[in-house]
Image (cartoon, rainbow, N blue to C red; front, top):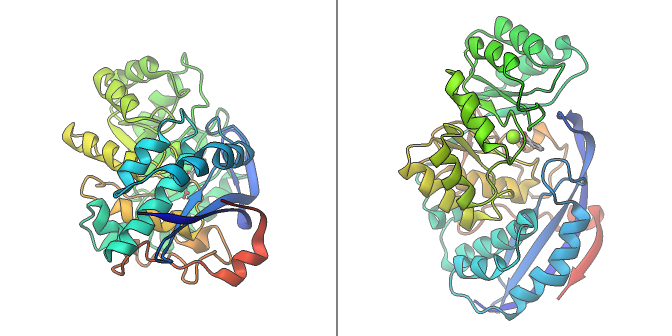
Length: 367
Ligand code: OSB
Ligand code: MG
């Protein structure tokens, strides 16, 4: 596929509700949208969904912007490719910088599937017509606020609720939610906030019937995760620990977790996300698709990925309305009765809302 134009733009959207994790709080997000235009004029969209600060992963919006302009866009310019995996291999000559690479890989897949005339989900190997949606809830000022949020999302039909935890906000709020919602599938995510000598909190959480405990310790602490897993009945789920397929191989060998959260951004794109899925499936590790508060472009890619057969647990593919009053696509992502439909039209399945995007666009770069 020949690329005639590469465009990057920085786009800001306000969040409908502040989102707080163990490391930071946010009210507005800035993501970078990538467009690759083919020789026939077909456009592929991708999203670089890095947080502004380096608190989830090492990247920031500014680092992604710099690496995208100086290294990734030039690689796309000079690489001849027939399939997105070939472009992904060229992009992977850049070490790290997964979020930045993911935006280009996603744009390549949406362009390629549009040109091939197949839905992105089908191009990736997806099989489901709709995917099960879970929701991720931030740290709230009070337990009553949290109970209110859980009640709202359960009433909307979400099939699993994930609660962010942090030292000082863990056993007590989770126990309160479990007591008020005894039947709701629940899991917790610590974003690596606990020191590796902390086990008491997790042993107390172990009795609350959680689907999983996500990323209790720092990303590289795989040995500590393996040791904790031997002491708990609740499965541990890895997120930040797995940025490469090789990290997954290490985690499986060490038995550092029984479940994997696959994020398109964190894995450096759809190509690597599919590889992680294939490996996890072969190893009997159930996976689900995590999110980074993506706008409609990245969210559509998450829905397509979640249609692959190994995604047997609900994904963080909530409706656009959970985060944004108005999304950047002409049709928002909609969650109905706990499911999001997988588009059946060729390509990504969502069109950018050009006028609204222009209003929200700051810096641009074209090559
Ligand atoms: O750990 O899954 C995470 C958001 C920002 C940083 C880290 C995480 C998250 C989420 C968002 O949980 C989930 C979503 O996009 O719906
Ligand atoms: Mg997580």
